[in-house]
Image (cartoon, rainbow, N blue to C red; front, side):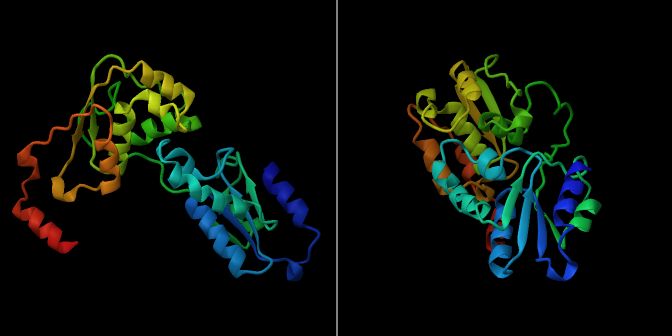
Length: 256
């Protein structure tokens, strides 16, 4: 491949004994940059190449963090300092298996670190979950954050006034908040223009959060819940029965 030939050519002038430790990190999200930072600090002279299938770095910090959470994205300042190290390079638009194979990378580098994570969605295993209008949270989050894979998702936000979110973690609350928060407030965030335009035309006024288990197992943090509670003119309804702890809940709480 062109990438492997160019890397091999650039390094063919050094003898094996004089070459520094060469590391390739596949994936430029937080795991990739933290790994690069540790290697650069621990191994004097080490050279690190961070490759990613996307043209831009930072992984989920860029595509997974809610646009109204700028404080969470501050960590990219640290990652930028790592990338500015003269012994570190970022190479985008490199897809493992298509642009270059793992075998080729192992020939070119002393160490190859795979830190690209898992992007597949977990299916519910129920009939008709692939119908139109049903989206994975990953897809919806990538859509409003401008990830190129979901740039053209175009979720239907007009045909109903109700949305149902299956899950009770922080991402579920992020999605609910983005759907219900006034667009005048979202306009001051990092949300993409196409998502903001769609949300301005949205008919969604009611959101149901559906959890597989009870309130005791809710995975969201207090901070995320407070942000939802602060949404202007929002009314929250919780069935008292859903807050009751079962014997199974008591056992689970004792186990954590």
